[in-house]
Image (tube, rainbow, N blue to C red; front, side, top):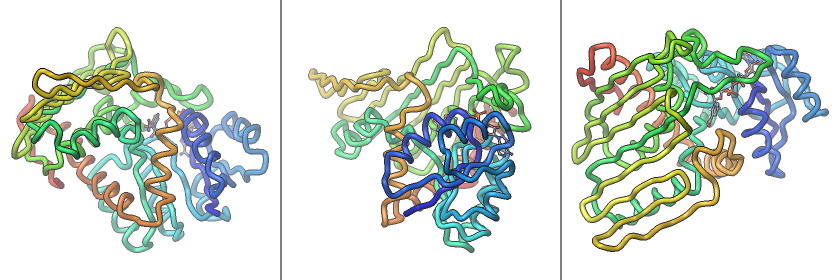
Length: 339
Ligand SMILES: NC(=O)c1ccc[n+]([C@@H]2O[C@H](COP(=O)([O-])OP(=O)(O)OC[C@H]3O[C@@H](n4cnc5c(N)ncnc54)[C@H](O)[C@@H]3O)[C@@H](O)[C@H]2O)c1
């Protein structure tokens, strides 16, 4: 039996992580920590037997847990992962962005190495039905070798956190570490890098703040990536008219168009349409994506996927830092230090 502590009991913990964790008989949430009394009261309602803590560090040092699942804001992630590794916990799951800087990644990597903990970044979008099918089509090399991948995410505004703490933390630099590049970019970058399956050579980005409610962080960004045999492009916006997700992958022998609830695989004159039940834009919660993430990264005895996930997080944070550097330099290409 895995005995887990939830660190941060906000929107994603309550609506994404908890329902998914409770669907596994071998996992039990036995402790919760949150700085908000309102959120601890909500945890008490949903988990009457759990031990509650006002401090995540107290939970890590005192609770009888085998692992933690970190759902606090991004600026707290690195310290909590290091503390959990230092206590020798077996499983350390952490929401995205896993860490904010390459220095934080190195610190976390050292702690993970010393403890042997399984440290996993919650990269749930790759476990959506639709994205898994895109991966399968690409793995089968149905459309040949990849020439370009374009992905778009549009939202009418930055999402709000729950009302019990600081709903606007996503546009607060100290808590979020950045704007939409860190928030939505993280998901789009692991999809793109995973599908391209080549080391990234350079990144160039432009970023801006269009809606003053989002200042000081960027609410629109375009990130272009160069690979040895193709290109990538990610467009991100918190100022779009509606919620949108889409993309297009051009291969040497065909293409894949990604829509909100279906993909179209085109080979010559033939187009095969594959519809999916859940829409990508539906919400951030999707317990089925979280279930698949826990199954692959945590419950699988073979650590291969968890180890791949952790290595990928280093490339992601390095790519994101390179994108911010490039945007500051007016779009001049930058090479991520880890690739
Ligand atoms: N994977 C996804 O699809 C997805 C979707 C949404 C959010 N997230 C990520 O999940 C994390 C939380 O986001 P959210 O939307 O649930 O935000 P939220 O504001 O709803 O929840 C954050 C919670 O953390 C608590 N908190 C803040 N500082 C704390 C601290 N130092 N110690 C303990 N608790 C603390 C707050 O009281 C709050 O309850 C973020 O990293 C975010 O990027 C991921």
